[in-house]
Image (cartoon, rainbow, N blue to C red; front, side, top):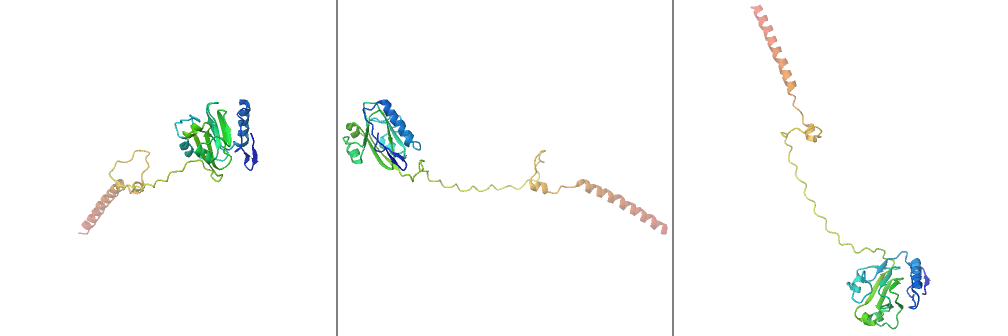
Amino acid sequence: MQAKASSNGYDFSAFTINTHTSTQEQHRVQEIMFALGLSNGYKFYVGGKDGWVLTPSEDYSHWSHRNRFQVNDTLYFKYPKGKDSVLEVSEEEYNTCNTTHPITSVSDGGSLFVLSNSGPFFFVSGNSENCLKGQKLAVNVMSTAHHSRSPRQPSPSPSPSPSPSPTLSPIAWSSPAPSPGVVLSDSEALAPAPEPAKARNSACLVGPGMVSLGLVLFVFIRSMV
């Protein structure tokens, strides 16, 4: 494997793994790649549960378009070792399924590719016949200026028009008195309460006084006759 230093860490865009390298050494290479450049990236499993196959349940083009890729993300290709491989190629070789001059070639059954810079990346199956039948992948890596991974937010729905406030009916003064512990409304609290007892007492005091005054006048007039 060859890697060169860059302002963002290490550039693995041109790394290669010798197909004769032992499995243990390949795993060590993968661990080094993760330690150096993947701390801030996402790991995408190409093809999901299907992996890198000829007839995936989801077309690779559709899978690529529904994901967003950023610098330092990785693509993980899973396939049966010895039965297939992954080649990173140019756009022209991608379109023609030319597998003779790949940028990178791996066949370990669990291949990792670091998306070290923004722009397009192109991958095809090492079997040109499979490539011609659709086993190829193109991804577009967003520039570092794009930080959001979330999908586009739907357009905000129009705010519902406010419902008219219900019209309050007048308070029925003949309604039953509230039960204990119920706070009265302002209108109920301010309503003057009748004072029947006071009125009755005043009437009782006026009646006897008038009678007494009449008797005094009657006696005075009789004494003058």
